[in-house]
Figure (cartoon, rainbow, N blue to C red):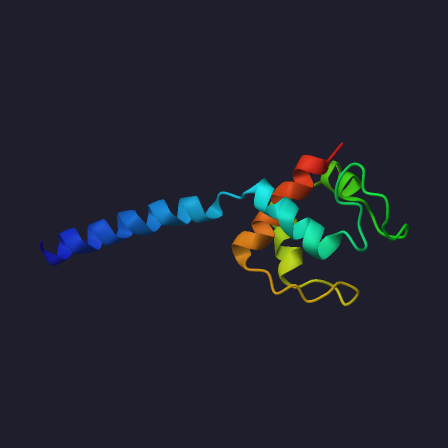
Length: 104
């Protein structure tokens, strides 16, 4: 294989993999939400306990200006009242995708 062919092949694989990595998985986000967020936020219908002073995932996901990328970026460096979840970029995207599904 020539160097140019190898470089082209590597570039194609990188682009293909980056597209797959960017596809968020709301089901994985639900697991994360129940683990990290349910103590303070109502993260799903039927949840009985949460802090009444924080928005529900239905309210956040249903906001007219909801932007999954903005939420994912926020989750990468949360405000001081949130736990340090140390989410990966993919996990933050998954969680944002799940929040969007809860919007009403």
